[in-house]
Length: 121
Image 1 (cartoon, helix red, strand yellow):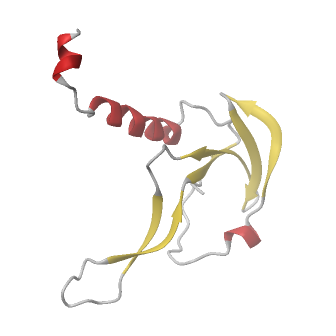
Image 2 (image 1 turned 180 degrees about the horizontal axis):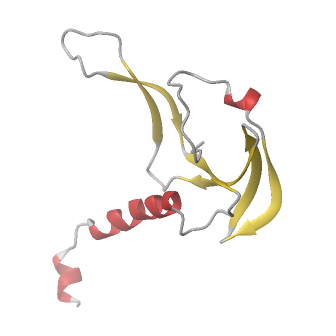
């Protein structure tokens, strides 16, 4: 979950037990809309799949390792992310959907071009 607020906690949280959402049945920009509340504030959000061949990870700094003090360990993995707005409907123009779009755009513009493709232009 990507919430429109700061939470002063850096540990695990039983999100499924304490943060519930429900589908509204509505769509905006082709995205299914969900509703929830957090600390008394209404949230409206949508779940976005990560592009093919992409995964998200929740990382945690590894216990002290004298050989590698900057080592991290994977705590969990995800292939979709639900982002939330306060009171405003999710939109493909929001920053998170645009970031996910950039992953696809970046892959396309950095894709190798063959000499045959150049010659055909």
